Image (cartoon, rainbow, N blue to C red; front, side):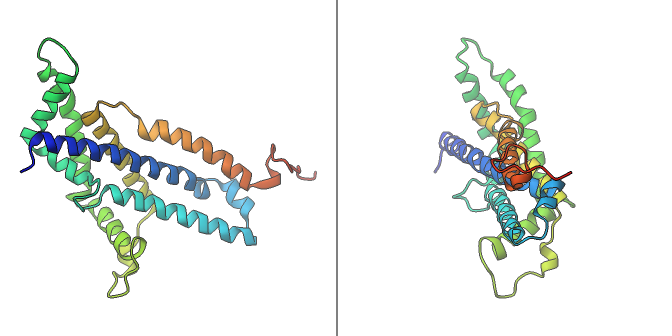
Length: 236
C-alpha cells in the first residue's frame, strides 16, 4: 500500500510536470493570440497565397493549446491529472502531512504548523473550487466535457465510428480563454501549496512569450514593418 509520504512525493512530481505543461500551453496560446486579436496582422495577410499557411499555423497553434490543457485534465492515473491532485488535497490525513512537511521545512525551533495550515487552506479551497467548477458545475462542466470529447475523437485520435455530433463539440474562444486562465491559476496555486513556489505563471511567463510573439508576427507583416531589413514605407 502506498504511504502518505509516497503519495506526497508523487504529487510533487506531478505538480512539477503540471508546471511544464502549463508553460507549454502559454507558449502556444501567446503565439496564437495575435492571429485573432491583431487586426493589423490579419489585414496585412489579406487574401494572398501566404494567408493559407497563416491559417494553417493559427489552426495548429490552437490545436496545441487545447491538447496541452487537456493533458493537464487527463483522467489517466499515469499523467499529471489535476483532478487527481485535488482528490489528494481533500484527504485530511494527506493535507495534514503536507502542512507538517511544509512547516518543518521552514526550520523554526518552534511549531508553526497551525500558521502554515492557515496559509495553505485558502489556497487549497480555491483549487478545489476551480476543479469543481469544471467537474460538478451546471454551466462550466460542459466545457470540459466538450473539450475532452473533442480531444478523444479528433485531436489525439481520429474516430470514425459513431463520432459525436459536431454541434456537441462546439466551443467559443471566450469559453476556452476562461478555462485556460482557470487552469493556469490551478497550477500556480498547486506550485505554491506543494512546492512553496511563488510563480505568477500567467503573468510572468505570459509576458515573456507575448513579447516574443510580438516580434515574430511583426516579421510576418514583412517589409511594411519599420525595422524590417527590406522596409518600404507606403507611398504618399
